[in-house]
Length: 126
Image (cartoon, rainbow, N blue to C red):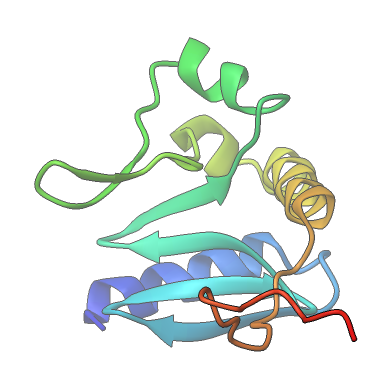
């Protein structure tokens, strides 16, 4: 994790100090932000990305935001960067963060299930 991301994480968590239950975890060279068990944001290379859905994504796109590109030509199309003016306004940022948490809650926190055997045979009738 780059020192730049550590400094930026400190700034973001300070801006989101009103959002109780905020935690962060390192992941694949980036930082994931969680509200409880809800993974709702990514910090990578000094940029904050929030999760979006069909209800919230149009606002990001209308502001010219593009989806998170984690490698050249590889996109995570549900995460979009937070506009700088929102990032600098702690009240606006908290509102946008709460909306991102709500998106994740609507999607549901997915937990790994039991592996399924794809080649199951139908049970024989006796």
